[in-house]
Length: 424
Length: 177
Image 1 (cartoon, helix red, strand yellow):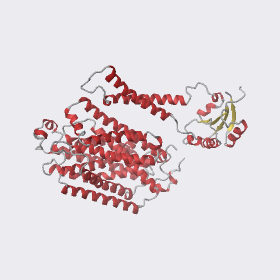
Image 2 (cartoon, each protein chain N blue to C red):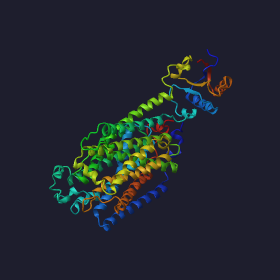
Image 3 (cartoon, helix red, strand yellow):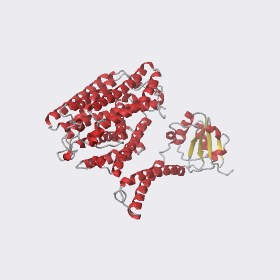
Image 4 (cartoon, one colour):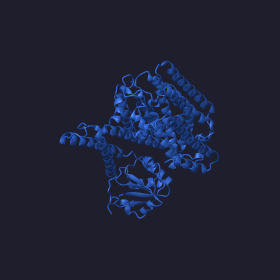
């Protein structure tokens, strides 16, 4: 029988702005350093393609987390969920990263207009030579048939639309939720529920087409109807892993003392477990259908990923992205405690980065058309990009956390008492 | 009526009362006893000292059995009993055995869960001595009961009655078998 809302000083207390500001500055400096390292990489590495693709991995990784957080908030509202009210506010702070992700994505959009245009996406340059003397992109029948969709204006326009959708939905959700802290009006809950009703399909379409344009089109001969769903599964898993990080951090700092109980941990752990299975289901289905149908336009994508050390990365994903978290989270004790969830969330957050590398980086080829190995200098640029974009995203989260004026938890949400005393 | 009663039943009016009574009975060291409540009382399992159920272990065993059955079945039919090449694929591969193994994992897990639950709860049970108690239907409506069985090692007609009284139980009644 937990204490009611009024008895929890942390919920109504103002944050420690000084401490958060220092932390935010650290994140900002780390982000700038990482971005600077990426720029240096462009200058010194001698392989602009590799650095640009590594940057695509970095920005995709953090966009994945933000999309997942957006989806979790939307799902929370559409189901009128109770348990997640006390955690939702932290996801709303996380949504502050979208506008910075947009700014950070602009250099990749710019590559379409620099040089031949094929720094990252080969199909952007009609003169791009295909392998083994098969002509150019412009003479490729498989490109010509897809040209109405895969072209630079479509790409630029779609990318702008994706970010517009994410930034706009985030702004609506944040505004309504933060305003409710002040006036406690139920109209904000209604507004968020409506946002969720149209926001879920909008976000689903945006993330699916983002995955298609940004990642799948790197090998435009290839196609898989599972790709968007695979990306969605990673989005939710990444957001849940980072949700656990935030819960652990705020519990350690004392903010969540008396707010979280075992059942909140159990819920986020169970949801994470469900999405382990969902991820495995779609990822296996994609592999299985391609393996079974044996169509060359599809199988080459996996053949590339059995070349060199990518084979072992594929095995790492199979066991590390599915079997390890699946078996680990079967245990009730491990999925219902902070100490049980933290290690597996760190592991999942790391393996999602590997999964994105696996889907993006083999598009980098050597002169023979074989993918460049996973363990190479490119990993350095991936790390620089992940730290660079991540620093900015963490800074955006912490800045929103400290300066948005929103309380630690939505103190006047209609379901706040239900959430605080969840299953107690 | 047999010489030895089935046990003692005590009535409580509120969820809080039965919660604390359960703690008292638990701390007195009783093992064969139970609470009857008209609604779920959060935290009552902790107050009763009930350990985690064994059902998840049985479910896991069922799941593993199902997975292995699927793999073995596909291997046996395709690579042993009637060798047939389909679509240029190997006679056996875990790839095409996976969907059926996955389905059987779920099916056997479900069977094991239901079966394990029935087994551990001694179900089906068509009769229970508390059903003879006149006011037991109130346990579906607005009252809470604690039942301590005479089969418990610590059971003593007087001492147990005194314990239930101390815990705030009312209408303490002997139950027939």
